Image 1: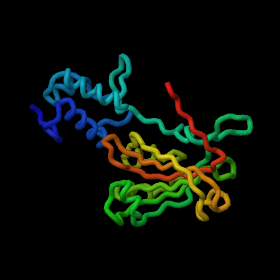
Image 2: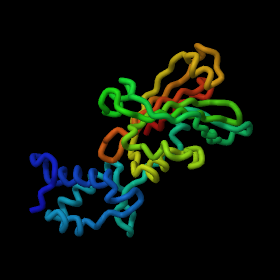
Image 3: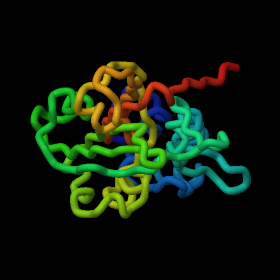
Image 4: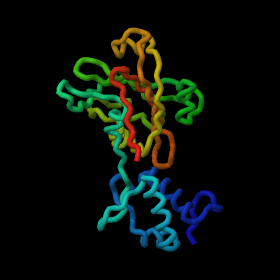
Length: 243
């Protein structure tokens, strides 16, 4: 019997589920690619097809995998492009949805502040990368973002001009660093803007802003990115579908 790493006290399907997630996080299978058939996995791990199917079912329910009729089972590629529109309304004069322009103001390595180290699961004062980015509608800043990453994992970002790579960071993480953001947790708060953030957003100090704190993780649950996005309260909206 093929011995899987992990807790041997768990049911075999759960052990396989955990092992497959680690394999996906380590890029054995890439987002958008098909995994082997259930029969092939059963042969590789020396377990029944039924046990493999149960593990795959769990990963499908969790959104890690997706079945495509007649084609097989694939690694699901998360879509984050529309996440801003859950909280902010960015529209042109005629009411059409507009994606704000992205402009990176700075990217630098520095020791991790305590809150950043805690969020990313790093040792105190570990080297991190901080990216400061503005999102603009025309010439008007509407979002100011602080993005924090472990330097050891994301060192290649310091060696390129990120603005030339396009407005979306997650595809850059994948292409340059081999790191895939699988899901994220977001917390929504409000605060009065301080002088520094006020200058970035062209708002008077003390103006209300909405803050979205996001912790992004890979398929295995490892923290990859911690970001705080502050936006004009006038653009704020909240939408949820209740069924």
